[in-house]
Image (tube, rainbow, N blue to C red):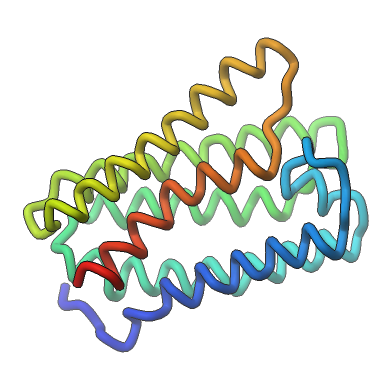
Length: 188
């Protein structure tokens, strides 16, 4: 598949809208720092609707960028796109099931966790592609370290009853987005 140059900046737009939307979430619905973004928005129906709308905008932009420009530009295996599509589908599903207690919280957390883990293989695929510069590979390795570090942290601290917060989520997803943005816009 050939890269569609019109889609190149959709990834940057998705990132900017997501970050702005999440910063707005923290500002508009202040809560304790130990809460995740999902826990923060689950406190009010208005914030749940906002969160669904945010991901309804961001995820299509991200997927169009990944499938239409990023994966073809770096000649990535179809598995790269499949993992990102699955992660996006699960993330969107999780936004539709807010953490309001009971079975919804359990389902939301499982779906969100699987969604996050699905973002690790794409970075591994990117790391081993021949079309990535050495500096690009360094950025991917750093992203993987952040992501895997947060996965280990979440699993170790779960046993100690320590909750993952929106700060930990931000670090984890920065581990995915920053290498993608670096190789897309700074090293091309």
